[in-house]
Length: 116
Image (cartoon, rainbow, N blue to C red; front, side, top):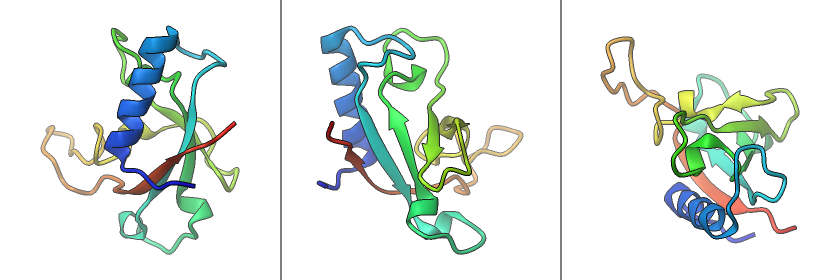
């Protein structure tokens, strides 16, 4: 496993999608894991509980899509099809009801591409 930043994951997903004409829900999409920092949460969670598997075939990684959703499933199997876009500090998460950044969104620790 090679650790990469969220920015690198996003760039890799977008480039792959463009080169392979990936559309939403496309089974040919790349997959990766996003691990969030413990400090993003109010209580302790294991690394497995802070890791979400995501596909490049999400609106947030496909050019020209109107939405920005990034659906992912936690490795612990409890949090299924969660829209990370709403929670991630690097995306739309971390804003209050007035649209002001609160810095309370989930912060990415590291990511990695899942080799198939």
